[in-house]
Structures are given as structure tokens and as C-alpha cells.
Length: 157
Image 1: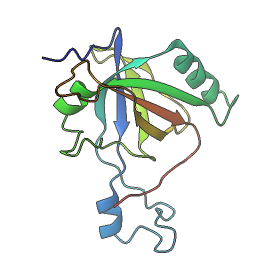
Image 2 (image 1 turned 90 degrees about the horizontal axis):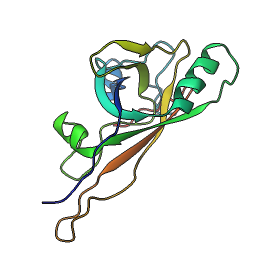
Image 3 (image 1 turned 180 degrees about the vertical axis):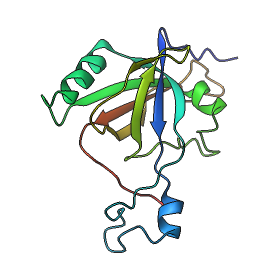
């Protein structure tokens, strides 16, 4: 059995995933740019995902809410076994988090809200970052998710 590590002090990162099917079905997507038209963004219900959150992330969110840095990057690290348990990893290993999904809040594991951003913060990139220690059956271990405070609502069908 492979050792896949774990998160040291996880929080729950609540993410509202963009719903491209609802937007395409409702004719809410620009045909040329394949982006939501104004007011056309549709989201799935928020999902809570355990993630390692750094102090820098909390500071960035506080500053963004005050208008200090409109393009703040912040990163959280997610563990693939949590993503798999939530049904967010496809058969091919792809993760169902995409550019344009919105950060709703960060909570303690018990569900108490720690931070609710006052600015809209979207996923800019979700990148796998390591494999479990297993020579026979290596599996993805960590996913680094980068958020940005400017809109990045791209639909992917």
C-alpha cells in the first residue's frame, strides 16, 4: 500500500463550481468567445473541500477585501484522496475543478466560517503536484489550486 501523506492542518475551502451545461442549455454563453454573457453565469451548489491554507492566503483575502491588491494570487493545497472521496476525480485522473470556479468561503473543519471574501475570487489554475510513494502503482497525491481576485469565468464543455 502506498503512503499518500496527509494535510497537516486542513480547513474547508468552499467552492462554487461553474455549471457550463446549465449555461449552454439556457443560451447564456457567447458563441464566439465561449464565455458567459452578462448575467449568464450559473454555478453548482458550493462544495466543501479539505485543503491546506497558508497564513499568506488569509492576509491576501483580507487585503483584497479592502481593495489593496485587485490581482492577489493565493494558493491552497488539496489532497487527492479527499478529492476522490468527493467524486471530483475522473477515471482519467482529471479533477473537476476548473478555471472560473469561485471561492465562497474558508471554514474550520467543524464548519465555522473563518473567512468569507468580500471580493469575487476565482480559480486561476489547478495543478497536480506530486505522486504517492509507490513504485508499482504511483498515484497523484497533491493538487495546488491558485485563486485570483479578478474574474476568470471560462466555460469548458
